[in-house]
Length: 166
Image (cartoon, rainbow, N blue to C red; front, side, top):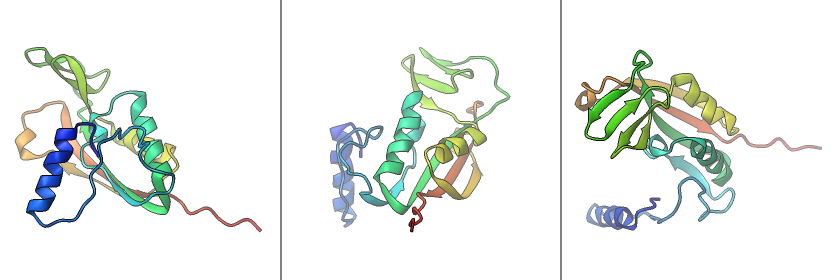
């Protein structure tokens, strides 16, 4: 799912060229309004949540919980902030990293959010998920010079199955 139709067109083309059968949707990943409750068995986020800032992060994860079937799996990724960076860091042009807001900008607009490890766990659990496994990986070598980017964190969580009441 992507809000940009051209991104979906590109994804469809890539899938066709690789012989992969997949369904792509133009839509809002925060609301997931295109999908009914309990629609999916599995939701994978590789870098989408990283681009959602503010209250929308909580809303997005709550809606992932909503669209997953009980027992469904959510696999999510966060970029972790280097908490040693305490001052705003200029990135060139209008771009900067704001340590208080934990985001970097594109053309001066907040664009990429960097989580704290416990904050990311709390976000996932706060929506009702149970964490099965998590791990942190060093940031990619290509980002070695990005001082405010500490590491990546992956969380595998599930939507609990309600217990029957007798």
